[in-house]
Every structure is written in structure tokens, then in C-alpha cells.
Image (cartoon, rainbow, N blue to C red):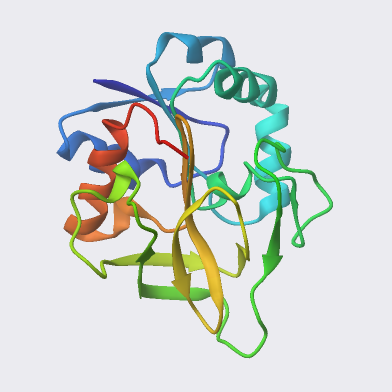
Length: 203
């Protein structure tokens, strides 16, 4: 299928496009928010600074389009800072998030090496979200971040990095992952493939 990848000037678009192509999908870089309605699947990427991503997203006109899409029950996946943007805000910046999910992004605890730039084990909630049906127990995925969500009622997977942090969320057709599935080898590709076929999570 054609998958809309929001292109607002920030994001790991090359690796993500390659991963989608490997899975048999075509990544369409969308710069015009009005085009989002034409896609069943849309991905919100994001790397780097929360405030910069939030500001560029708004400048590109995507804020209301994303909120309307989620309110209409249309599928959306946020990746890394793209997941963080779904929340109310971040300790990294005074720029607000989209406020779709309750909660804030916090700086990770100071007694661990930051940024976390490594493979780490996913702790998956049971019953499993559809995203994780095609992965083995205790899968490993690749993280790059210094800020994370501590708690969320929508969490479906966690990581342990000095303490527990949210690694994935799901609410209806809204999904988010803190890790990079496009950089997580076959495990990440399986998660991305399962997410793309997930019509709606029960949470």
C-alpha cells in the first residue's frame, strides 16, 4: 500500500522509506497536510529536539490535520520524537506537544549514560498489542533518546534503562514507538509490518 510519511523537515525519512519498501509498501513523502486524508496509513517520524520538531510540525501546518485524523479514528504511527509529540509536552522544551495522549515526556534519570544509543529489550504487556504478535519473547530493538515517558495509560511495551520507560503506546488506531523499528533489523521490520496491518487496538 501507499503509506504517507509526514515530511515537515525533520525525520529519518531515508531509512524509514527503505524499510517500507522492503515490506512491499511505498512511502509517499507528504508536505501538504490536506493530502493526508487520501491515505489509510500515515507515519509521523521525528528525531532530535522535541521543541524543534513540534515547532516545524506546526509551521508546516500539520497540527490540526493530525488531530483531526486521530479524532476520526484514522491510523497513525508516531516514531521516536514522533511518538513523544503525541503527548502534552516535554521537559526538553517549552513548546507544547499535540496533547492527543495525556502525560509528559521527561528527561531520563541522570545516573545513566545519555543519550541512550543502544539496543535494549522490549518488555511487552500482555495481552499483546497487534504490533508485537510477530516477534518472539524478549525482543531487542534500537533506541536513541535522552527523554522518555515514565507512565502512560496507553502503554503497551516498556524498556528498562535505569528505571522503566514507555517504549510503545496504542489507543485505537493511534500507535507510537519510542524505538526505531526501521533500524531494529528483522525484529523492527516485523513490528512495523504488524503495525501497518493493525486496524485497531483494543486499549
